[in-house]
Amino acid sequence: MTPAQEQAVIALLREVSRREILPRFKRLGRGDVRDKSGPLDPVTVADEAAERALNAGLKALFPGDDVIGEEAVSEGTAQLERLAEPGRVWVVDPIDGTANFAAELPLFGVMAALVEEDQVKAGFIFDPISDDCAVALAGQGAWLEAADGSRRRLRVAEPAPVEQMFGSMSWRYMEEPLRAHVLHRLDRLAAVTDYRCAAHQYRMLSAGHCHVQMFRKLMPWDHAAGWLLHSEAGGYSRHFDGSNYRPSHTGGGLLLAPDAPSWEALAEALLR
Image (tube, rainbow, N blue to C red):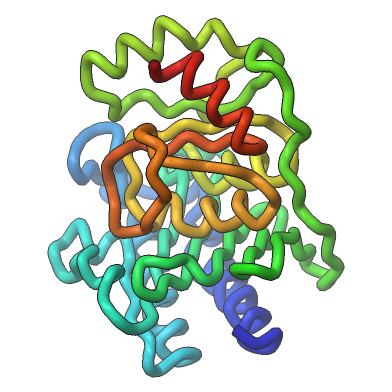
């Protein structure tokens, strides 16, 4: 990806945020929010409008690429198997943290990741509120770009003993007996949070503001961009069984840590 293309993607995320998302924030009507798979999985008219705009914008910028959005998959018009096939695919989450957005909480983001044959090549996490974008390019590092174009490199936290680590844990989709097993061991960490927004949790983790994250459900629009951001910021992550992350794999869980020894210590403390 060229610097001009990178800037074009950031500009698109900013434009869609200003045109489709922010005008609807704190202005949703009674019929503007509905549940998809259940009460923990809402969608709003802003999600749908933003996804349409992102789809059109990315196809205009990259005519040969495919685009897969969260809402398109939930409607059955796109398939995740496409991620493992030849060719480039953009995976987008128009509003990550929809529950926060619908609850009028200013903690949500817009995520886009470029995937090629199940490998994440680029990741973008845009914050409409602060008007900045976390960016990662495979092999080129991770950084936060402010609205004025200034940048600062992202780097994960320094390793620490398990009892001094803190971070976010999303256990709502864990099945038994794993769920009970992990919940009974969370007190081995210094602190645990869940902001209901993978976009900001990945930004926190990659900027060194926490040590660890754990997820069970791995839809690619929630994790592809953030996984690359964390990896390029120096972090180490694996599925619960120790295998490598792949965007097309929606199961297996994901544990993220500052480095490989930290991951092993966390896996021992929480999973084994």
